[in-house]
Image (tube, rainbow, N blue to C red):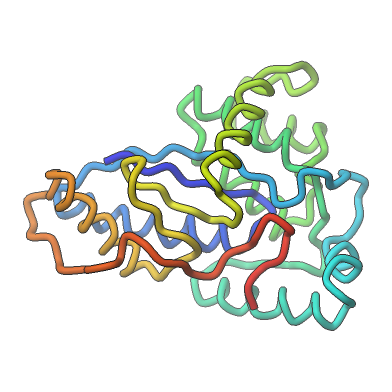
Length: 235
């Protein structure tokens, strides 16, 4: 089964959603299912500048003040902790993520797309690094053993094309999980819901693994917590 995941590396619900989906995939594969995952780019703030501005300051200006920003990030931080993820918005830096998506794509071509994705999530949410900085990205690439010339145009055209495709498909919030190009699950759904979606899609498309698929009517649709294309995250 092919699953395309649209996300951005500065989206906290994407970090949570990817983590939950990875666990659901492990459980699905343990039942005999096969999954091919492709990471698709989406930019919450395509016009953002990578100038070292703290995320809290950026969010306060955009969403009506520091109190509102603190409420938004406080909620998602608590949810992330329940999933074993540490989000440190006190040190997070707002960034334009275009080059980060280039790194993920180039890493994917070298069989390290997932490693790059999670390294970028940790860099932004835990380590307080500027994932819009090509210097930071180059260091991450070296640490991961990825060949990536971000000073040029490597991967740029492909990322622009995929971003345009996401808009054409009507993607306006992430994470979004697209199963077999037909069935969409929106938001950071619970792990059990994502597993049920895998099993339901497998059943609908004749790819049911050896274990009997559970009944999960409606699981391959609907929405969960997400960040939208204005950069606003669910509270």
